[in-house]
Length: 161
Ligand code: SF4
Image 1: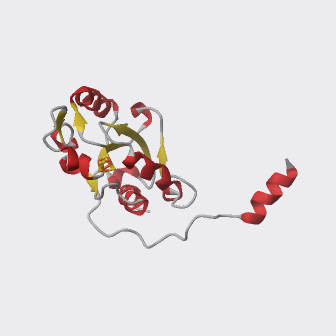
Image 2: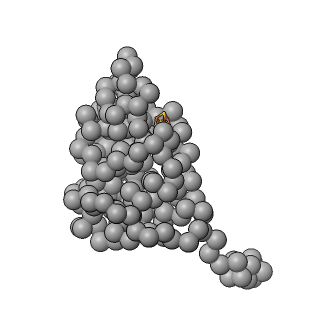
Image 3: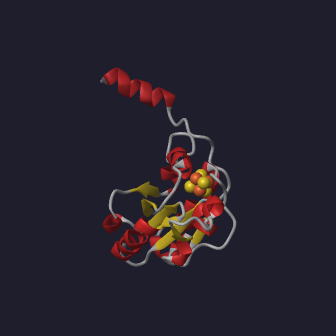
C-alpha cells in the first residue's frame, strides 16, 4: 500500500495542461453555481457516440473534474443535465421528469448535433424532436460526435473555471 502511495506521489498529475478558459456567454445559472456543478447525464436517444466522448471528457486526459464538474447518479443531486441524442418518444416524458427533479438554479446542456437539431435522425418516426423541444436548453455542444475538449469547454462555462 505504501509503495502504491509513493508511486502516485512520484507520478503526479498526468492530465493535459489546462487550456485557457472558453470564450462565450455563460448560461444564466452559471453565476449561482459558484464554481462547482454536479451533472446528471441523460441519454434521450443517442447512438452512444456522444457517451464515448463524455467518458473521455471525464477521463484522466481531459479531466473535467479539475474544473469543478462532477457526474452524479441522480437528478436530485444535480445542478445540470447533460443530454445526448434526439429525444425519442419513449424518452420525452422521462426527460421532462428528470428536468423537474433537478432543483433550481439548474442548467441543461444539449450535447451533440442530435441533441441540438436532431442531426442525422431528423424526421425519423420515433423522434419527438431536439432537446430544446422538450426542456429549456442553456448551452449547446456542437459535433457528431462532439470532441471531449468541446464538452469540457461547455462545462467550464457553467463552473466559470
Ligand atoms: S450527435 Fe452523432 S455521435 Fe452523438 S448521438 Fe447523434 S449520431 Fe450519435
